[in-house]
Amino acid sequence: MTPQIHLHVLASGSKGNAAVVEGPAGSVLVDDGIPRRTLLARARELGIGVDDVRAVLLTHEHTDHVSGLSVFANHFDGPLFATAGTIAARERLSQLPFEVIGHTDSLELCGMLIRVFPTSHDVADPVGFRFATVDGNGELVDALGYCTDTGALTDEAGQALTGCRVLALESNHDERMLATGPYPGFLKQRIHGRLGHLSNAQAASALPDLVTSETEVIVGMHLSHENNRPSVAVRALAAAVGAEAANATFTEARTADGHLTVCVAAQDAPLSVW
Image (cartoon, rainbow, N blue to C red; front, side, top):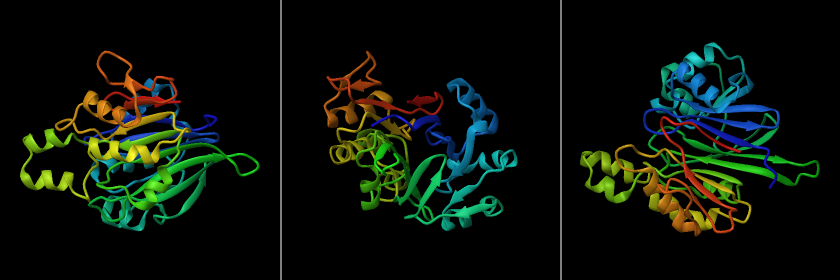
């Protein structure tokens, strides 16, 4: 694929999430669960312009994905998109001028075709997104898949995420660390359940079906601070695609031919994938 879509993860984790997907004709902000000051500082650190954001997409209504949106919207005159269930789930969201999307809709924004797909989480109507560009003949040029906060991959998610050049996929927890960690039993069950979060092992087991010769970067998303470590997640994901450590800390891995890279997004360290 020819890189035309770029991912800039400003924050990823239970304390706040925000990412900018940059297309040929502007950028889309996916979720905003961090303060505006932090969002602007992270964008500057990555060398990207928030003024290039043309639209906002929400995956779901949990606070760590929406807490910064009201303030952001005060400085933004572009469209906001979310499912009806997401909008209705929080009063602060219902007061914003959202355009409603369904969980199987398609949009055209910033020179990208955006496919919406349902995820599996304990909220009203959660979704993920596939971003793609095509040439004048309708042939696929580039694709990015974005899927976090899901306890299982729906059939629609699997179809949308297959063969993306950049695959941003939740790899929330190590199952052993979760089982032996300090969380109460009900919370462990929630996280590990079908309406919770994908574990490293679950994400890794999905990769053989999602990764094709077109895939160049896998980004583990929404890592738990308490129940995961970057090196643990990368090791699990790398093993599924035959990648080896690319640094001494095993926080990045790469296949022997250099074609496929595995890395993880972080809560406090922004990341760009070109």
